Length: 94
Image (cartoon, helix red, strand yellow):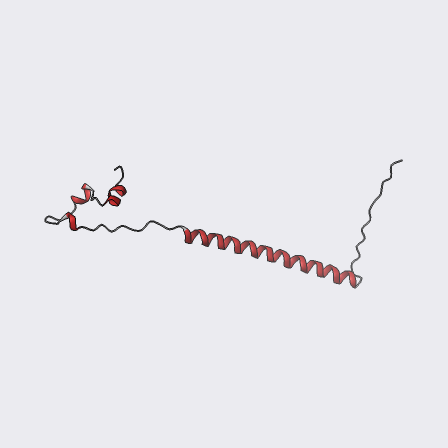
């Protein structure tokens, strides 16, 4: 066994921990409590949710500005305030 985690997983008590036990303690009755490994699912889902929410917010703002601009141009052109003429230039080869 190379690492202390391997010893803990196999149910062995490392020698450095045996030296810390008070005299007269039975090592067979010792229970070593370890913290559970970190679960990264929650923080990853939170980051994805925040990123998706921000992207949706930016998209909604862009759509709102586009609709507002289109409505403004339609109102101004209907009232005669703005005129827009598209002219294609045609070049004919001789």
